[in-house]
Length: 34
Image (cartoon, rainbow, N blue to C red):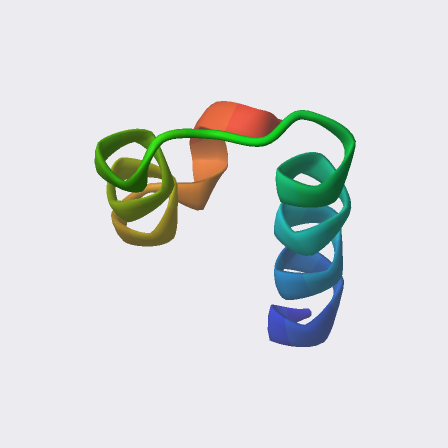
């Protein structure tokens, strides 16, 4: 489960580069991608 979330997060970060602040918020709350 965790691996799937991490992979999804990584794909999102690569497909649309985010600022450090956005990346930090996504890392804390990956559910925003779902």
